[in-house]
Length: 270
DNA sequence: ATGGTCGATATTCGA
Image (cartoon, rainbow, N blue to C red; front, side, top):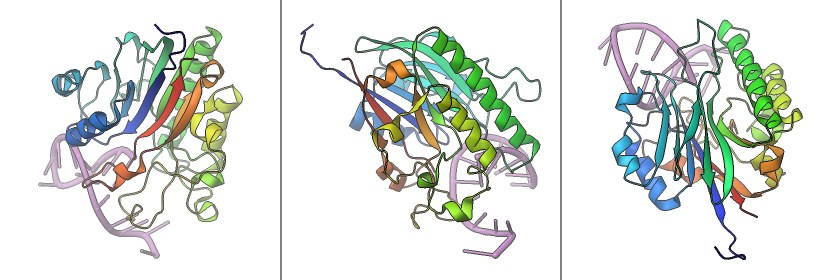
């Protein structure tokens, strides 16, 4: 290996809203961008229905936590996915929700623990599902804290279903207190940051107004009304390697697109 | 303006 070789790790997170209905988009995206690690959410299928063959053909090792019809998360990595963990939620009522998968993998000499996270949307503020959303944040925080204490590099990307700040939504006044932008959930998200995790996009683009999700129902994409509810959070030791971060927003304009665009961060091996 | 549109599934649920 050349001493001067600067290598870049591309890590992408994407709520794909059904991996089976979006498989051609996924393949097109991979061929164009060649991510080293791809974190998927809302695959909406069980493991035995996941398109392993098509994606292994593109050079990926794959870890899947599947569920019929709803939720489902996966990790694709050019390197082997080791030490897979999914048991974040043990509550009987929500145990079957496949919303978290984590593994160890390597990218260009970086040893990373990576997680693909699909935080509950919450359905309605103050509902039982909203309470579960807040509990999910607590469980995630405890898990991340454990990993930070082991001094591993953590890259945890996903649909956090919260827009952290005013800059992250199209109309902060109107949306204040509504699902995805309620103070309680924003505090839960901030708590991850206060623990030391960095919002890679915001660290590198402090003033950018960019979104990652546009609602189907209100034709949000057509009206430029979106929210930045997908994030790639990184531990402080991984943040030292951050080079850039952004949103592949053009993907949201593809025909029959997911309501979320892929997001990325790049880490250098230096 | 409390609708709208998706995907999986079954004629409803969850987002």
